[in-house]
Image 1 (cartoon, rainbow, N blue to C red):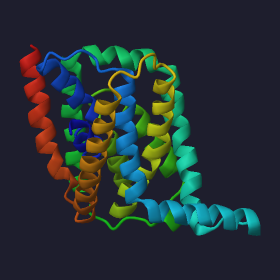
Image 2 (image 1 turned 90 degrees about the horizontal axis):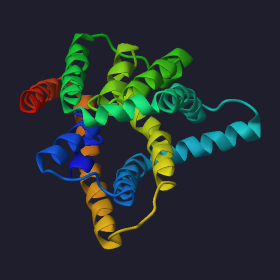
Image 3 (image 1 turned 180 degrees about the vertical axis):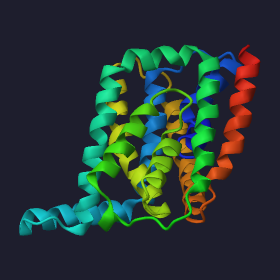
Length: 252
């Protein structure tokens, strides 16, 4: 449930998982179980954005056939470009990122920071640009934001959606691009973790976890997209500040 809720809401899934594991005195979950949870939330994204994904596939087919970039395939190109800085940061800084998971105080500080840039989005008043006017620089900056979000406590959705809004994109596009961009990111991380699996452990429990992460994640995704459309994403800042401060207090 924690994975399903926090993977999409801009409150940091990694930060909450570190906090709850520490709070309940749990050991690091088995890699297979962790992979299944991520597959559950990945499936939620695919199901929610199935129509957009189909349009992208059709656009790619059209572009290959007619040898010109179709509007539906444009967002696919931006996703590929945004994935580059994320992948490079993940590979080059992997060891440093992983070392932060054992430092709850830093995690708390990063959740507090997530709240800060969510709050700053309320200062954006002008109407945003559509996909037709989105540029390569927009996608590259959003990709950097996603790379920074590998730091535990920095929300991936919060960082990428905020980056899209700061770049001047319209609200719905910022949310949609953020979650479509999460598909290769989650899939890539899942494949890397899958290679480390030595034991499948309790398959039944893992499948149950996947199902719960999918169901709860789908509900959280529907809720967040509505919040984004009405321009209230900054409200999550207060929650991040409260949780971040609580974690810092408890770990000190």
